[in-house]
Each structure stands twice: as C-alpha cells, then as structure tokens.
Amino acid sequence: MRGDRTDVVEDLNRLMAEEAEACLRYFQMRFRLRGKGRVAAEKFFEGALKETLEHADAIAKQIRLLGHIPTLNIHLSLSGGPMRPEEALAEALEVEQQALDAYQEFLPRLTDHSALEDFIRKQIAVETEHVQEILDVVRAAAPLKLVPKPTP
Amino acid sequence: MDTWKEFEANELTHSAAHHLLAIYEVGLAYGGWARVSDIARQLNITRGSVSINLRALKKRAWVETDDHHLVKLTPKGLKAARPVMAKRVILTAFLSDVLGVSDSQAEIDSCKIEHLISHSTGQRLAQFLRFLTSGDAVARDLVGRFRRFHGDCPKSRTCDMCKGHCLMDELKRAI
Image (cartoon, rainbow over all chains, first blue to last red):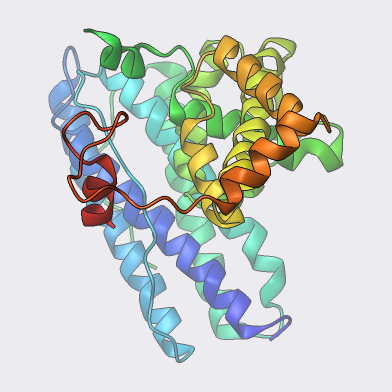
C-alpha cells in the first residue's frame, strides 16, 4: 500500500466519522421538517440515515481488516429549529458532496491495495448517485423518489 | 445583570470565530484559499460539519467559495477575524508571560476567551503588556516581584480580595 498504513486508517476513521455524523444529522433532521413535502422528506431521511449507518459500518469493517480498531471522533450539536424540506435537502447535499469528495481524494492513495480500492470505488459510485439524486430534486424542486440504495 | 446573555448575543460565535481563523491559517500558504478538508483537519471536525457551518458564514458574507469548493475570507470576514487573532496573541502572551501559565494551557484558554472580550479590553490588555515589557524599572520590578510572590492565604481564609470567601480554595477544589 502506498504510504503509511496508519495514515490510511486515520483517513478511514475520518470517512467513517463523515458517515456516522451524517447519520445523526439525518436522524435528527426528520423531526425538524415542516411544510409541504414533509412526509416524503421524512421517508427520504429515514432511508438516508440507514444508508449512512451501513456505510459507516462497512468502513469500520475495512479498518478492522487492516488490523485496527475504529476510532470515532465527532463533535456535533444540532439545533432544534424547524426546517423546510428543501432546506434540509440542501444541507444533506452539502454533507453528501463532502463525503463524495473525501472518498475521491482518498482513492489515489490506494493503488497498491486492491481490495480497499474496490471498496472505495463502490462507495464513490453510490455516493455519486446519491448526490445526483438530491441535486436533481433540489434543482428541479421535484418530488422525492424513494428508491432504496444498494449497499456496497 | 444580563451580561451573561452577551455570550449568546455575540455576533461572532465561538464556532464562527474558529472557522474564520482556521480558513485564514490554512489559506496563508495558498493565497488565502483553503480546502474544506484542510479546514476540517485544522478544527478536528468532519468535512460535512465544516460545509454546513460555512453556509452561515457565507450568509454573513464573511467567506466566499470558488467552483472548486475552495474557501477564502472576504474583506468583511478578514475584518472580523483580525481582531480575534490579535486578542488571541495578546491573551496568550498575558497568560503565559505574565501569569506564568504553561504555554499549552495559555493557548487553550486564550482560544476560549479571544472572541468574547471586547476590543477595548483587548487594547487595554495590550497596553498593560507593553507597560510590563517596556523596560520601565517599576514594571520590571513589578513582574519580578509577582514571579517571586508565593503568598499563602491567611488562616482566616479571608482577605481584601476574597471578602469572606476564599477564592483560591474554590479553585483548588475544582482542580
């Protein structure tokens, strides 16, 4: 593997934190939703929180495969103010885009570690699809599709 | 006394101040531009959090972003960040050089206080530091005497400072 294995594990821990934090955001966001489209958005975030938790879990397993124990570093404080579905989606888009960027920046460091590289490529594919879906909804103000996501 | 509420009413929140300073520090080597990933590392939080927090800073026109998701302080953001940076330096110097607090603790404490004290208090503190380090014989003597001062509290646990309730005891108990 190119680079130090500890650095790779640190990056995986960061990726896991992105996913776990997104999960908590979506968990709480469901209860803040108000206005038109609330029910569909709630369902969307229910799916998204399950998916992000699965992603965090998958990354944790990759860390374990490398012989390390996952460490989770999250500093999160979420206000309880009401949110319109479009505001919540815009926020989710920011979070998903950052996760996607993080996976993409991590990928070039894994050229000598094919299993992990494959895993990250799959994550990128899923995240790309997810970002695009939210982007479509935000741009078009279209109704939310509730398509279940495949787990990598 | 509603002073405590000013903590919440502060235009520059603790989080905002730290984000502005992190953007400034990370961007120093890159013409002011900072990557979200580097800001996240600097603040030891996730990129997602940084990205969400940047939305509030953008709304206040304190930061701008480009097509590559790079972030930079606007002149308005720089104007908000500079006094905070100045107060951090002043407070760190005061805590460490005058009070003798360890460098690491001085860094931590100044980081907590920097954006909460007023600019005028920061100025007076800077003036006080200038006086203490001016080479003035009285100032030199004062600093020297303070460093040698290990005055124990009186057995009665009362003095002019504490007025019947030993403040040093309170702090000792908390450590």
